[in-house]
Amino acid sequence: MASLPKTSLVTYEEWLRMPEVQDAVEEVVDGEVRLMPPNKTNHSDIVENLRDAFGPQLDKRAFRIRISSFGLVIRMRPLTIRVPHLAIFEVATTVQQDGYIHSAPQLIAEVLSPANTRREREEKLADYASLGVPEVWVVSPEARTVEVLLLAESQFRRSAILAEGMLRPTLFPHVEIPVSQIWPD
Image (cartoon, rainbow, N blue to C red; front, side):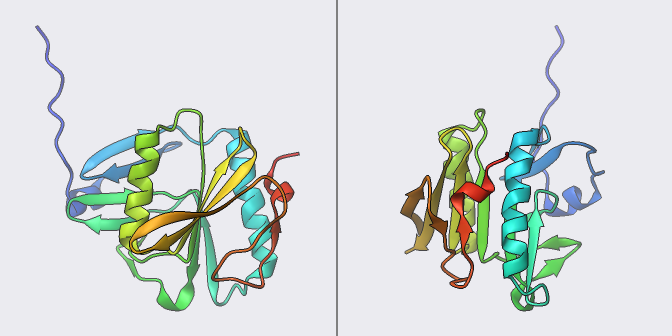
């Protein structure tokens, strides 16, 4: 009888030596490597629309907008690396090591997929809270809403759910993004 291969948890040092996986998204949660398929077009369009909406409103010398192609180190032991759909980092406070970011962004946006489970969402939000991310937007393409979560006492609390109107990030009060602008045409 054949047996399944033994799975082992990876360390930060082992993970650094692993080859990059082409056309897939890789996260590590508590040492377990999780491969996910690349985003579908609709999903990617939303992320790009958010980036395009933020871009002209932020000083590129002071802030970096990263989308779905970078590793955010949550913790090194047990190793947890997340790949947010969109994150905005203040250049002056960003910590990079080994080619990866090891500091909290000022804002993260996550776009839900039908395959996402409640448990996955809760794990990801707990990781972002542990890193000290002050604001997370959870974008639901199906409901066409954006849930705004703010960090308070080490937990995210819902500030609003918007189906229309303006998104105004707490740390960027001059930025205004119409909810209608993030949906694909």
